[in-house]
Each structure stands twice: as C-alpha cells, then as structure tokens.
Image 1: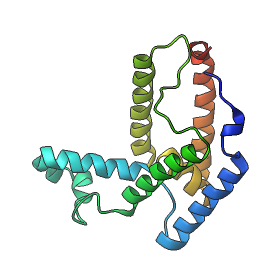
Image 2: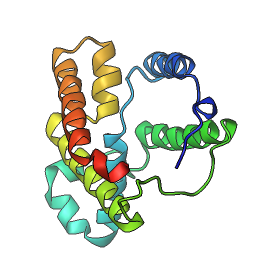
Image 3: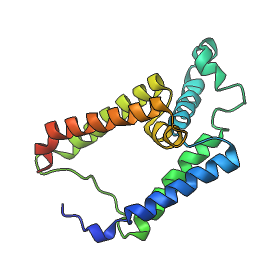
Image 4: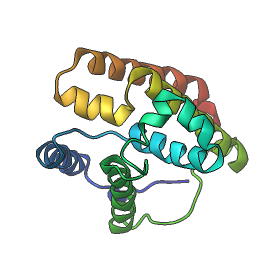
Length: 171
C-alpha cells in the first residue's frame, strides 16, 4: 500500500509535543513516562478475577493490589491517554481507518501473529529490563541513564538486523 508522506505528522512537531508531554509528566506526577506498568496492572486485574489465590501467593503480583484495584494507577490513565492521542493523531492526519499494514508476500493472519509475537517478546523484555521502550528511551534517556541509552542502542541495532531479515515480506 502506498503511503502519502504528507498525511503524517511532521516528526519535529510530534517530537516537541512528546517532549512536552514528558516534561508535564515530570512536573505533575513527579515521574516519567512508561507503559509496561499499565499492562502489568491490567494483567494482574484479569488474573486476580480468575485466580485470586495465585495473585495473593506471588509477592510481585500481590504488590500491585496494595493500593486496592491494580487499575487505580496513573500509568493506566497514561496508556489510555496514549491510545486517545494516537486516535486523535490518526484522525487529524486523515489516516483513521481499520486496516492491517502488510507487504504483498504476507497474509493478514501471519502479520497479526508476528505483531503479537513481537509484543509478547517486548513485554517479557520490559519485565527483565525494568522498563519498556517508552520508559527506557524517554524517561531514562531524559535522565541520562547509561543503562537506558545502552538499551535503546540495542533496540535499534536489533530492529535494523531484523528488518534486514524480513524486508522481503514487505516488498
């Protein structure tokens, strides 16, 4: 599918807007941005509804219940805001529609399976590295954390290496 570059937001304007969001998070909440905490809390909420004894027996999972509902956390609202912001950005650039972007050599099912696999790998990596790419890159990078910078260089290197391996499916 052909993409019209004029229908995307200017990356410099979007970058400044993201920087202002990060700055306001530091000022208002006293913390930076991150998304993996929200997905953990959503997962614990679901797991607690199905297997509350398991959640109570795991210190890591039980810790999210210490404030009451795991969904009663600012990170959950941050992620909801990111979803709404993405919808607003797509709408204002005339790109809001339901579609699966893929190359001609790949089916919709395989594309969705690849996206889900990538999401699961990133979620597991976020737990191992104590932060997702948004938390590591934006918050850790803004705080000049050496570990965050090393993480992001690794993410980009891995992304470029994988892109080389799978680019034929997009042509």
